[in-house]
Amino acid sequence: MKYNQAIGSILLAASIGLSISACGDKKSESKSSHNDHDMTEMEGMKDMSEENVETTVATPMITKESAQQVLSAYLSIKDALVETDGATASTAATTMIPLLDGSDELSLRIKVNAEYIAATNDAEVQRSAFNKLSEDIYTLVKSTEANDAPLYRQYCPMAMDNQGAYWLSSKKEVLNPYFGDKMLRCGSVKEEI
Image (cartoon, rainbow, N blue to C red; front, top):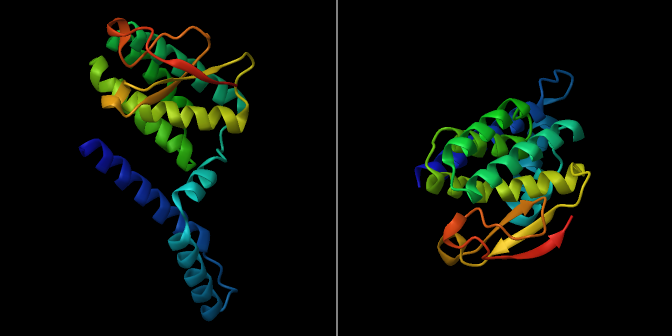
């Protein structure tokens, strides 16, 4: 719960900051046109659906080369969680953090989840953040074409208390990072990227 509140607070602060910087400091604009711009922007924000927010996030400011390095660190986290090795997952997440400057919403969310995974060696706690990280890495890969080799988006319907969860793998063979050796083969390939 605290984790979700922290992410919500960070995203709220980022959106306020972006709104303020979007308005700029243009002295040549008249006061009324500036207010009209603010009203139009606020109405646009109010009308945004979750689907539109995801579309907005889908344009990361990260280079393809950096995205490839982030993907490599993500796959190391995934492999460590398959082995239920929280220390290795933490180390892999630590290597991901400096690759992300948080200059856009997607890289900020990836960075926050990587920091969460890096902060603990408890694989069960890391798996919660890994679920969110997996969705954002999927968006990153799709928008930057970071993968040079095929990736497989896999899904386990029993993960996350039977709510289901996705992850990416460089191998078609299902090795479940949410359960490790408890249910290693639980899941299926849903998409090849």
